[in-house]
Amino acid sequence: MLLAIQEDMLPGKTALERFETAKVLGFEGIEVWGKGLTARVPELADAVEKTGVVISAVNHGRQGRLLDPDREQRETALAELRQSVVDGVDLGATGVILVPHFADPTLPDLTPYKSVVQLEYEMLHNHLRTLSDYVYAIGIDLYIEPVNRYETHFINTLADAAWVRRKIKDHPHIKITADLFHMAMEETNTAQALRDHANDLGYVHLADSNRRLPGQGMTDFAAVASVLKDVGYEGWVSLECGAPGRNQDFARQYMAELPQCLDLLRTVGLFR
Ligand code: LER
Ligand code: MN
Image (cartoon, rainbow, N blue to C red; front, side):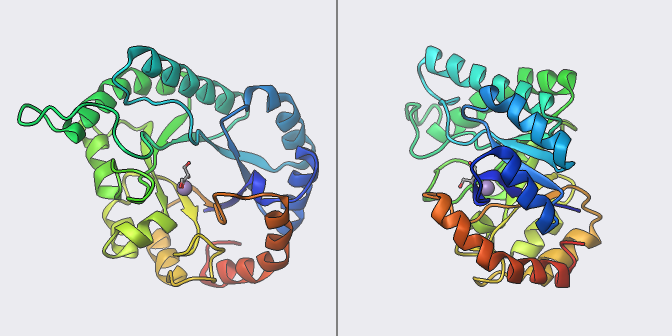
């Protein structure tokens, strides 16, 4: 397992400053946001080269709507996603993290013919047919991330995301991001869900049950670490804490609290 942190959790005016801080703290990777990334590729590539800290993944974040009734909206969203994929490849990332849809549905309810969610699953599958070939050809993974019910009505659990994978025949480049914060709300048992979906896992977001740093909430990180080791998970575990509304004040506060968190991650074996 390799430990990463989201770039905006780190203080610093430039990418290089943030990468240098990450290196001192012992992080092996940094996760970056997809929005506005293309213009930042040279600066980030330079920081990677100078520090040896790599880009773990591109988090596509909240961009256009892939599951919209309007074709133009879908095309725009697909173009944005393909751009994140290209930027990810340029930066040597292992994958692009995708939440397929945030908030309420925009597709129509066609019951009894088809429910909104049925239509959404079918539309997502249709997108993934070509996207899976695209990411395979370009050499990167796509990680579908389930998020909690207050952020989306669509794909809340690892099982929901795994269903999408099954439908695309367990495509080796379409995997799942397990975010421990969302899981604390949506799964019956976080450790068991990780075990059940060990073969689907591509990436892990580390946060406690309240989105704070590991150790500041109720999640059992020893149980999480023990399952991940047990199933032979070799991917990234990446800190995503404090969102939304994160800023440089937050980042400075994290710096004071991070050592205790890193001690915990080391003790349970999520960090060397
Ligand atoms: C959203 O809450 C989240 O967890 C992110 O990783 C996706 O944008
Ligand atoms: Mn996440």
